[in-house]
Image (cartoon, rainbow, N blue to C red; front, side, top):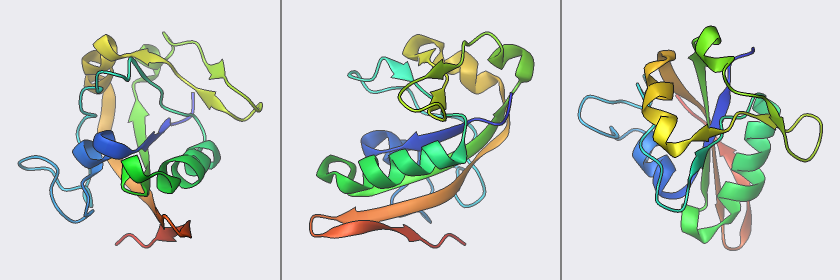
Length: 141
């Protein structure tokens, strides 16, 4: 299985990736260096769905997350590796187009999922939009 990508938005993104991006998310975390784990899901988010291609992750972050006021008009793409044996437990889901592939991880399984992340979670792309302009990719250091 290829390395999963994950998109983040709204409160999840702020908790996991920090806004602004140079501020640490929690004590000892620096999103420019890497993030060790994803935060717990919010109440209305029963599933964590890492997507399996950067193209799909960029589309969600840019076209969905960075166009919404509730996300602060910000979308992130993260990249991370998961233990292959553990990841094989999850059936690959195709939603929409054939390249819209993702895993479905129940919120109550996220702690175990985090324990199987190999290395750190990298924020590789950030998009910022606004109420009167299209999202643009923001340079990352």
